[in-house]
Length: 210
Image (cartoon, rainbow, N blue to C red):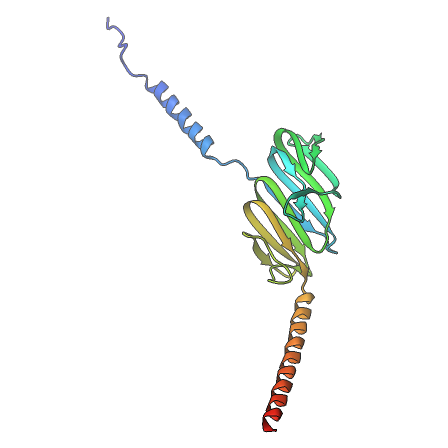
């Protein structure tokens, strides 16, 4: 009777270990879902609606002060924080910093807009979109600036500004007809300056003749 070979390699066990290791590597390689924040300006340009989906334990509701410091937003409305099970969570608000147990959340709120200025700051990097309904737009050097990294796309109905993995966004928006008004104003001043220069040249020429 042949005795069993105790030194024979266990191929089945080795294969299972290899598969388990491969699955572990794949799970580690899959990136976590990015934190996102979507902001939409109301049709009359006076209210900002926000929806953020993120994983973490804090969120910021601040705006820049006169010296660039963080100042808590005072007029936040309809704030609702829900966890991944749909349960409403009551966050603690400390000078504009919301805190809550670590987890996956959806946060919605709204706030009034002053001077066409939109600003948001985040505790970690977020993918952000800001949607401006027609007739509002942005991206003008004077009328509507956009913070670094913002990519503007527009169609007949809206303008969308997207930011990828950023910790702060800011922009100012304006009505499209203001651009034409600005150009008309500048053109008017150019005419005034040209007439003044021509008059000056004429007076100077007459003085030289005397």
